[in-house]
Image (cartoon, rainbow, N blue to C red; front, side):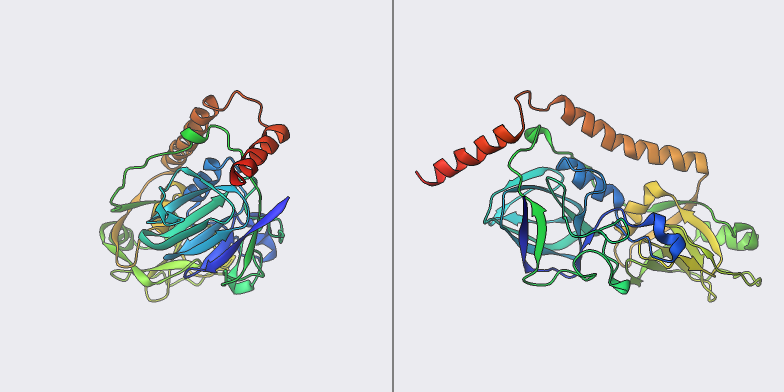
Length: 338
């Protein structure tokens, strides 16, 4: 049975996102999808969803929501001081929510992007081109292709049972990001040796020009190749060098093709850390190879896999199905009428 969550305050820019439309880039559609895919996947894992279930992604300030049904939620990504019915709740663990509850997320204190996942399949808006992701500039997907607005209703499914509820949590140590790893891009050899050395030795900053399409970086200008290029397909994490020598890292809502030379590509395991860096944050690019990039991604995925195995081992033995679900709802009804 479909139900909903009502938007009381939408936050700065809250959108529906999943893993995007990678198979439709060849037709010219942006890939879109969650910016911090590790946090997005973790949120879904926490509430026992499929990895591609749609969640809410909020930027800088999260929404305030009223639940019209029972659910289980998980908050991941950028640090927030969220409350449920004015009581603090923790991130990176499952929280049970009853019908009528009010969730206030508020400002993102550390990082840029946060994720809110709902149990029993996530947000169930109508998919567009195999995805529920919102692409704001093409007004596609999500809720009419736009960010949430006050009064919107977000369709989800009622949920009263969560296996291994008590163990569904994970703790991360906060880390100061000073290095972002990259592999050589398709046009690496077009750049001079001095440009290579400069790119790896200089300090870069996230500029104020940062959005879901890409982050422009502040730092010393690089020497630009003289050769003109035809437009080529883009890849998530590509680092283009513009005509004035400035780097731009291409992200989820990037154009599908581009004509600036690509000096490198941020490895997938570092992309979630990169997109969470705030304006003005300083870092260095560090060259690595494909094998190391793959190994880092495998280790990152292992965190998710090991966590799932731990929860699976602690799942409830009792039968969990329609009968148990109805029993829980009847029990709540009786308690409410005592």
